[in-house]
Length: 476
Ligand code: MN
Image (cartoon, rainbow, N blue to C red; front, side, top):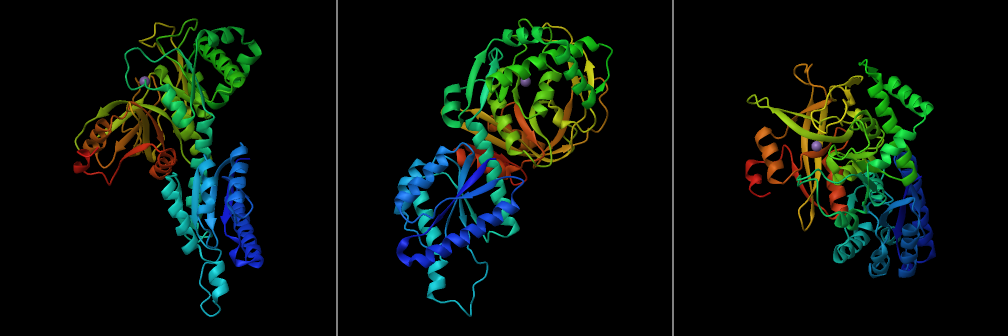
């Protein structure tokens, strides 16, 4: 089980009894957090930091354990921050500075000097905050009494983001084929993506999948067909086309397992040895949390898997989508977002139908795909682009809406949304920011998680929403 290390700061100036109380109070705090946040993360208390050596040892324990995704730090007493320097220099995991106290209220009648020396995070956390700022370590500060709901919610958000950063560092994107020829935004610096986010982006020929698909047994294909039939409505007579998608997914399953892949890309320009572009195969895998990028878009493949991890356990849908076309009725502007096939099944508002239709590009057989209308509710549209000398995340608030009318001739799954604060500012802002046409849409996540991810990974962030004005467009 993934956990957060918990480091409490003190010093030996106040005597043994004080240190015993520090340890006891922190144990109580960690026990409380473990009970309250057990659906998201667990916490593990490390030895109280009394010296620089203990701090270094605590950090090394955190760094050495793959199950540990980050650390929460709190200064119960004053903890001279020079003793934190060497430890913090070795920390390369997300850091939360919890600015709290063991007590909620001041005991006005009983307070004496001992109490004040024991409970002085107002003093100690400032000393510690200084050294974090001085060392330039990206971190999140959460202030408030640890039992309060708003504080617990913020710690939970940090835990989600820390788990996502942990996945990011273990991301392997298998790119089958290269980027779609001539497309700019799907390209970029793969080496920098690995240095910055830990994404390993490795090339394989699509023939690897074709070979594995050819080797799929009838039993394996039937098991996959049973999975499709249990989740989706078969709305085609062309069962053979669906079986071929099942075959490809069996192949992807094997490849993913053998190579520890967390995300993958393909491209309709390189389907050598395959009869169809993966449709259901990709849609079904995305719904299981595997990142996917069409047209060789390795950034969105990795980023979507990271954001799906962040949204794990939350209510709502998260996945890849492409901006496609608009309804520009004045004051009622809407966007129709979709893809040529690969819209994740997690966006389905109704039970998806399996349909088979021709695909105008790629020159292959008619692919089977899932067709459905999309979920509704408040959400975000988020993308990551390579600006040459840095990466940029763009996060726009949107409202996903029910499509105003049926679209019986549209042979692909789709979602629809309204831009915020309005169409003009929302979409112009996205264009000014260089936002890609490939993005992750989520009705689970909000700007706060994305902003925390951007802060902790040191990524530029541009947000668009109800607080964006026309004047802001000039400043993007
Ligand atoms: Mn596309």
